[in-house]
Amino acid sequence: MPGFPDLTALEPGVLLAAAAGLVFLQAALVIGIFIPGGKAAFLTGLTASLGHLPLWLSYSSIAAAIVTGSAVGYLIGRAQGPRLLGHKALVKRRAKVESAQALLHRRVLVAMIGGRYVAALRAILPSLAGASGIDQRRFLVGNLVGGLAWAAVSVGSGFVGGTSLLELSKSSPVTWGAVGLIAVAVLGVVLVLRRRSADVPEPRAD
Image (cartoon, rainbow, N blue to C red; front, side, top):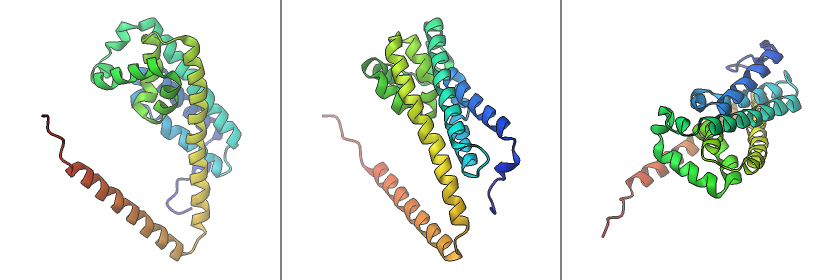
């Protein structure tokens, strides 16, 4: 496909192992905020859409990586405690960390499901849960449900996106033009809405 990386030239076992490793490290370590685990998961789905990897294997590998990585992160958080909370990566994000802690104490399941889709939270939530004394059983349930759901969305979106691109590549120039116009229109609407929201004055204190 023109302009599309030749993922089939990569060794599937190496590709999958590398992607799963990145996902694991992102969930296990606080410094995982700098690791592209989400992009790696998406890439495995994209590669599966090209027939280079079985979809079930891509999904199960990424799901296992995110769940086990988060479990390790939780244990590290429990062991390190205050020392972990004093890490400069968390100190710089103190407001977000405190907000995440409050959510973890109120609703672990919601935090572990919703937080997966923000790279920074995906990296710090497991360790933060351990350091904050979140009950292990509650964390394990949230970790399992959230991890399976995140893997399905990440790998699945890569697979669907790759399949759609393959079909689109066989389409006529007219179809490509229509897709381009739609994309430009959507981008324009988003930019207008963002500008309008930025122009709304903040309420004054009485």
